[in-house]
Image 1 (spheres, rainbow, N blue to C red):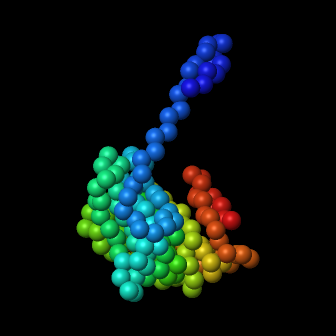
Image 2: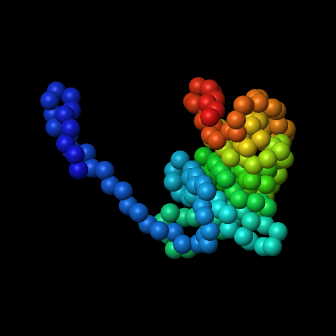
Length: 177
């Protein structure tokens, strides 16, 4: 709890509360988390082995019942490095060390499309809320823009170093590090 000065000399009390609730489900490292704006669900991506040929796994969570596993999205063959959930919570996209981006239907728990634009690990993505356009970058030093309706990727940038983070500002300006 903290008291700060408000307009006209008023005193305003601000309470910051953080509640930590552990989620059990992944057996290995979690590399990424994403939620929709309402917070009605979140998705985590990991290094968890799901078979002898598949390593990356996404888990779907309901924040009201963290002790229950809502679902799993299987299909990547290496670590899941980044994930974005659509504003309405019906879809998500994931990027992986297998050099692919996958579009998922969360309700049906299945992969809708796999995009193979990159030549190495996808480390970061940015997108609009409806996931109609996805920007991706990674270890191959390339930044692509993918139209998620036509599933066509356009090379935007060849960076000097691997792309660690992409941020799409509200004014459509893309920041790359």
